[in-house]
Image 1 (cartoon, rainbow, N blue to C red):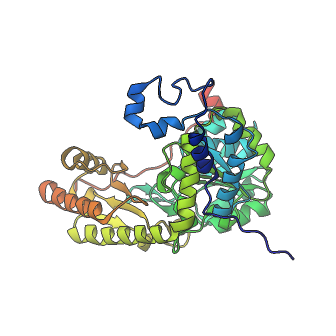
Image 2: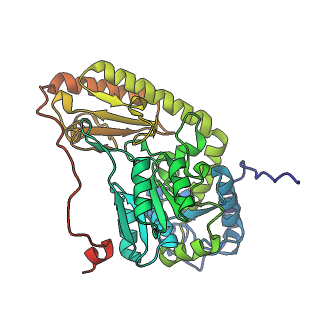
Length: 417
């Protein structure tokens, strides 16, 4: 049997084509109207000539995102190879468009889809668009931390057993706070029941390029995955990937994507995906090993301050918290007498530190390939000073959360009565 040819991950076809295009000095009688920046000098001064010079329209040497046959197709093949997928689609509408394309590719009006209550709004909006019916699994809740966890295996098995006509199961891999369900087991259960398994990996790009990480969707055998390259992967904001497994029709998914995605794909976004994929393929394992090391160090230092709880893999219970993303720096703040959103505001307003998120009980600092130890030291020092300045007795435990009990309706009927 002939050995399968390995693609050259040192290539970046879209970037290379744009470099060639830049040298050609083509006279533009097409869109965009700024004509390589000449028509908008303020924008050119702000973004730079190199940037606006490659903000171009689809043309023969640069391929077309709607029906790629050359450099964009090559970039997609390289991305699929790097992520272990059967195919990869470059997405320029953010991971929202990837999630919605994933759902719309597998569900139609009246179809049931099994999903956790804590899905991203893009999933619910996709159900509004297609008229599919959600079958909710209520994930466990850590009442001390006030966060939703993953789906238990028995919860998913029960939902599948009670809804054998469902067409798909959707899994967060991971949640915002880094909690992972038993994805391999859920994939097996879904496939045994003749259902697709879809993964929202908006916060899991690094799972594909790191050792000692939770399993990625493609490695677990999932059918489709929406991956936010711009979050932990280093590409420009709004650029994303949609990955598919061997059991999914590439042509059908392309048709679904083209229903809603722009016909004027941004070459700034596409080239950033191309270059970032190459960077991760070449250096991802070494880089994310350092990210984990920084996150572990920060957890240790923050916990040593006292009052805070920077939680991590010690939460793993093999089911509702089957695994944990070690790059997530999540910190419970209630025991110093401050809500997470209050610490979020203090860090931003008084220390010029912008973290990702704050809720009633926690803050989340997003660590990735661009972080350095000196900035992390600044965050740890600021948290220590905030504790010293603001610490009071906790004003009570985090409020308990329970799912609202309402008259059942589909997202589509709720949005379009």
